[in-house]
Length: 588
Image (cartoon, rainbow, N blue to C red):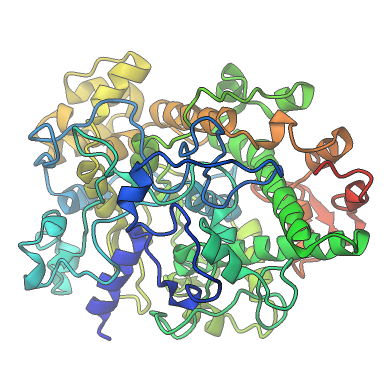
């Protein structure tokens, strides 16, 4: 396979949520499941007649989280919008603006010192991508492997937005003129302007680990001890099949598991966490069925993930002031339970999925001593030189290396070398993100400033208070009008205002995360599915506990996200008290 062919295939898998199901489609008897594939559009749009279970466990697809509106938040739900769609014809045709590759090239010249931040480690960016893959997944119009850069793709509707990079001096030097781009699939359940689907559930539920349909989740279970997740070579992820782009790849609950080594390490960490919990629960409760052990371990691991998200990740991302204003500080949830709102649809906003939470500008220039290599899992693991626990090796690097700010300019890895394994060229993720926003019909940046920040912008100089002096000049050289600036670009050019983000992107993110919490019947802070002692123990969970329990690391930061956090000795930490889950404590 040539490098160009490999990059085109990688681009299609970057956004497409369809998977090779041959691994598991015959592993169990076929059942009549909703949402088991993206081909079941018609069935998806028909309101299912279901009797939701009462066992206290989440479904894998997200169905029945809301018992009155079964489909809300389920996989392949239509994305919501903060503002109406913006298409040239009012229906589906993307607006024609400056070429994304031109804008990306100009943003590379931004003079900001965007190398590192004093506040976060690279574990922050890895956790952030892992979280994003839990709650967001763009669904494209065609199957994996489509190459819109081939002549046969020119006339196909899904290829009308392929990226022309022929004017980009960097790609021109490498004789690259096109980057593969497939349009997002239209949500079939809505009339009117084109909307897209979320290929993930809209809940923080570790679906990237457990899968989001019954067939996949069954396949991921160990065949001999079905309360465990399947592993290979002890506690490593199971290897992928014949469709690996590189020599070595892994298989899990989400097809993006192999995008880069830091993400693969996060998948490994939470696979191990499930199996650790399941083994302990099995010891404590030998009469429990394999089903109950698996689901209790899954429920605990999801709760721990949610607690770390609330306690350690969100305050750094959004800042305490903004969280406090929205009643989302962790300390608030310690004092009183959050309230589940069954009238609130737990969907994902298109603006969040496609622009605000695309924190790709945080991807570092290098991970360890290997620039670019961490986007090839096979190469990174082979050249890391460590014969033992690669997960621990990668995580060690993440928790001790200084993270990059989420502002532009993006690193060269992001704008020139995504999936580059030999150091010459790769993909331009900045240009791809700009194009995806237009494909999804996002309104211009200034429209969101007016609607969400009550800020009126009519000329580029109006952006100086938000961005400083240099960024508006670069935007003026890239766009014909300030009203054309893309949300992804403008939002991530703002100076830090709340945590790591500018004011607009932070407002979009806090709006989305507040909805995720309040509209999830199972969210840990509602205190609906754990006894008081169990809840209190779970709320003490930390990133350090999860790292110490599931890696070979001897010493970790108290807060793995925070640069300069005090180190703790793993052998001195007790971790989660699972005695609280002995039979006489358990609620379910």
